[in-house]
Amino acid sequence: MKIAILGATGWIGGAILKEALSRGHQVTALVRDPSKLSATNVAVHAVDLEQPLVAEPFAGVDVVIASVGGRAQQNHGLVASTVQHLLDVLPNAKVPRLLWVGGAGSLEVAPGVTLVSSPDFPAAYKDEALAQGEALQVFRAAQTAINWTFVSPAAEIYPGESEGPYRLGGDSFFTDANGRSRISVTDYAKAMLDEAEQGTHANQRISVAY
Image (cartoon, rainbow, N blue to C red; front, top):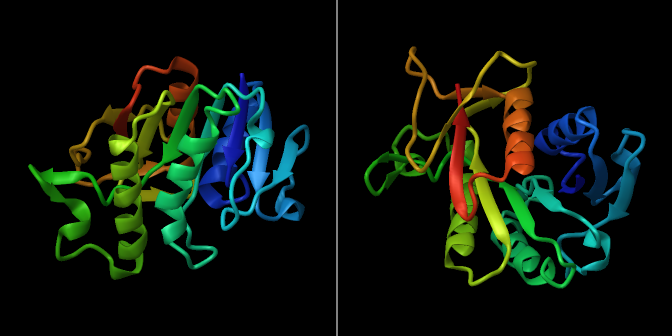
């Protein structure tokens, strides 16, 4: 497929880029600073998310995968605004699908109770988690022809290679047999590319953990 990765020089975006290339997809990297991109055989477009998006870099793309946290620019407001900009622009580029790297904070630990609202949620990640929750609400409220999927990682996403099969969930927070919610960035990237290829979770949030 032709895949555009927004935020391909970030930690998670870079793992997704590596996985997409390993599967033989044709990849376009949309990044703030093209000089930071070391991958070869990748088309590159400079994109500043603080400026209006245009359709041209997305032309001919089958699916866009967006990894936007706002932390690098210290601007978490970019998260929800980027969702809206993509939903506005991608139909003009005739892009049918958008996959979004979401957060775990909006997962429910009880009906109507989110992980980010729990008292022991790390303060350092709270602003980003709240921003990702706002992004999810933008998706759910949108009247759009775009087929979107919001992909929440486990509460612990960390560097490392594949550790084996992952599980998919929905809006509910879930853990492994040891009571931990965890996924390596490599297996998260695998889950993202599996969804890109299979397209089985249209217009919904899914979650990925062991």
